[in-house]
Image 1 (cartoon, rainbow, N blue to C red):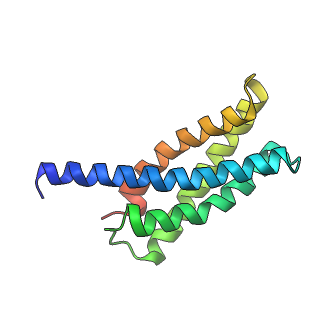
Image 2 (image 1 turned 60 degrees about the vertical axis):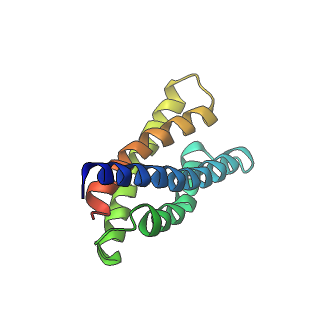
Length: 133
């Protein structure tokens, strides 16, 4: 594979990751915001519910579209993705709760910023560990 093909492959994968991640983050965000705003749940619980709803969107989209050239079987990729997502969620939760407590910013802004930061780390780990090609 020449350099142009590699660059094109990375660009395609990046666009797909962004699309799947945006869909999963949108589910996470809307469900989390609804749990907080409409149902009066605390920020941590609302975030957990949003995360749980976004997880299947993320795994299925990345497994079968973003990283469709992976050679890792489902029995390897899913546990790795679960570990990555659990770690990402822990970081997400810690950052979210610290920011809600210490920053004079609205919840909707903090939740969105934290999701973007965590997404960047998730892409790198997904590409080089979870869904290796």
